[in-house]
Length: 93
Image 1: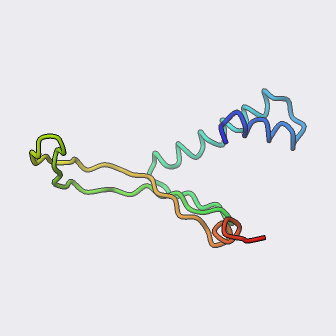
Image 2: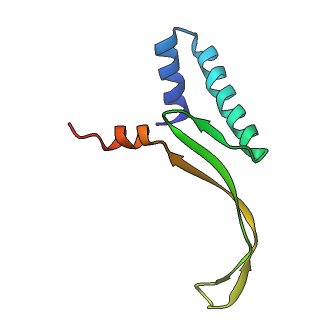
Image 3: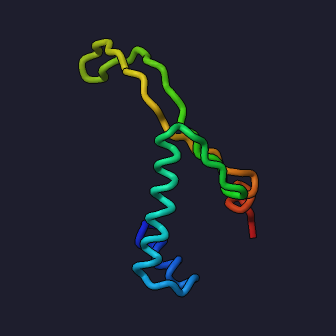
């Protein structure tokens, strides 16, 4: 599913114009992005949690040359689905 698909679904379900639907989807993504940039957690009940975690500096190896390199620390985004989402995905008919 793409952002355009999401806009289309919002448009069909809400009756808003496509422009308004696009603005709503963009606003939600901007709010999520800004929250995560601040290092805050996003908890969506029945869906899951988005968390920014810090990965420490570590040693690595260049696979082409075998040379040891240092991989710098960085932030990573993790998602942990809720039990409700896991159950819905794994539900068998």
